[in-house]
Amino acid sequence: MTAIEPSSIAAPFLTHAEHSAALGVTTHPVTPVDYAGLGALHDTVFGPGALTRTAYRIREGLPHHSPFCRLAAHGPQLIGFVRFAPILIGGQGPALMLGPLAVHPNYANQGHARRLIGEGLEAARRGGVALVILVGDRPYYGRLGFVPVPVGQITMPGPVDANRLLAYELSAGALKLSNGRIARARSV
Image (tube, helix red, strand yellow):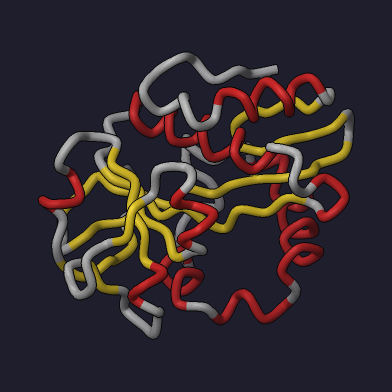
């Protein structure tokens, strides 16, 4: 079982990690052995239409995992995962795009997603990543410290509601210094 190390990132995630661990859920970095299970869980949570979204187009052609991707399991059952894909913003990096984040419906609302996000963010911070971007629900991700990207400062290569583009700074001032179009990067 992996626990989040206390840090400035861990604060909003620590209680959820402890709760998740108390329920017998373990986490670890994603490996190629996990791909089939991740695909099946993705289909269960999102259905087939999710793959047409702009964020998926950015991740297309990238490896299925980076060193920051995490999964959660309850015994032998995969119950959740989060992907962090390397991106460039205006040709600059290192930055990551968070998503997809998936938790099996039977395990939803128990803190597993927050634990996965927290562990991934902490690993990214230790890995020298400055900024994490996602397209998501502001009320949910805002509670975790994600903030809106000023409209037009960072853009996607396809249709996205600019009000759903959120950022998490792993290095102070990283958002202010990031401008331009998001593109996939081959590595972080």
